[in-house]
Length: 64
Image (cartoon, rainbow, N blue to C red; front, side, top):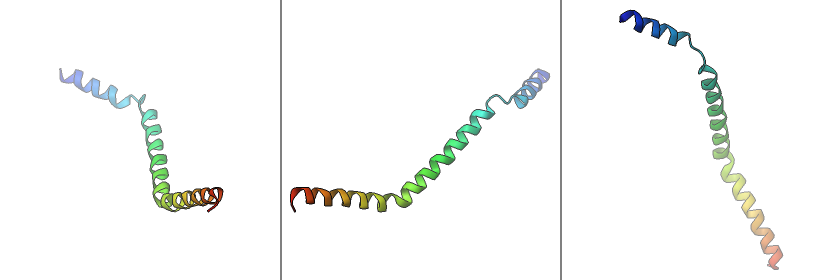
């Protein structure tokens, strides 16, 4: 019984089929963190400037 368990553990340790998926998941997580950080850092400045520009254009179009 113990030998079967040890053999199964050895096969599991040598199996690298899921390693690539994990690596891609870690890369995607890093990209998501970078995007989230950029949006958090620049979001308010960019969005407020963008919406202020749109509001100004509406005021001009409305004659105000």
